Length: 128
Image (cartoon, rainbow, N blue to C red):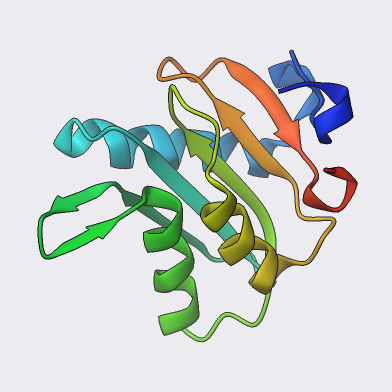
């Protein structure tokens, strides 16, 4: 991830709001509960939060971010304010697309390592 890709690499915890840090904590908890590859959390336009972990069923594989977004939609969310993804990997284009569909191009996607260290804050609208 680099600035050319719309990321703010090396962002620190000090640069995130308390509400954004809460999303990171929720995403880490979702991942750790089942020792999943990824955890994610989203905050909707009313401040409600939803979290999820990677689902690795042969008949229904879901990324953590897709699950968190689906939970928000199922609960009636009409928009997203922020997203946190805990993962060793960058978010997939499909994950970014599903988050942007509900959150818009300016949606911040906070990407952390498994330990919660901030890897980048992506802004899809500025990604090439």
